[in-house]
Length: 275
Ligand SMILES: [Zn+2]
Image 1 (cartoon, helix red, strand yellow):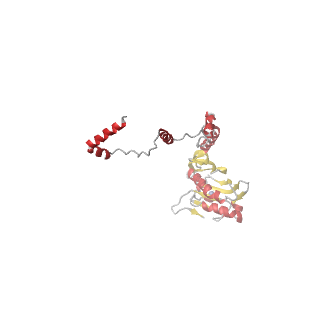
Image 2 (cartoon, protein in one colour):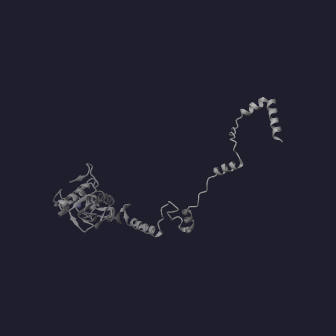
Image 3 (tube, rainbow, N blue to C red):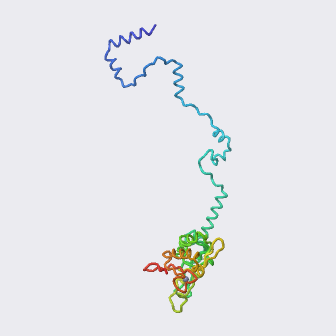
């Protein structure tokens, strides 16, 4: 028997060196857990087994994903939260549309479609446009016929179409076309002999006489201004042009403008001139 002898040696050592025993108690090493007396080999095995995480069973989703063809892996909502990539055909179509719009855009604005004309010389010195564009559509609304103007005026027309014209006719519309009664023309104001050159002679102005709705209804300024149901949207659209344009003249202004809106981008020190 070895154990009694060993413990006798430990007891002897503790008797001989009591200080060493005290040092043992004061050690920083963690204390062993008290033995509950049941630490059999079997119990130990159970404890070790409990510490290991349980292996999850293989789910059906994982089996499905494994069985899927490789090229489908990314496009499957089962395996990835990424949105489905668009097929190239759709992407190409979208890009082609965008390219076309970019090609037809003038004044650096995709919403102004037309063609660049460049310098338009005037019949007389006071007329002419330095950088003219011929505008076909603004904010998706057709100009009939396409109108010659400068970019400042084209931009103002685009802004008014979006913020004034379209919202005013939201219930009747959408507006698909505006009838252009006049655009660039080298002439005097109201065609009066000896008068000052009109803003039309500088590419700053446009006259609009009617608006066509999607369903084919045509609302003219001449007739529409006199009727209740069309007066309201016409007036709303007209009023909104003030400020976007430097001058707005309409049926309420004078006898020259009974049948059209005159908008121009001449700027006055006193602010916009709206009648
Ligand atoms: Zn005019």
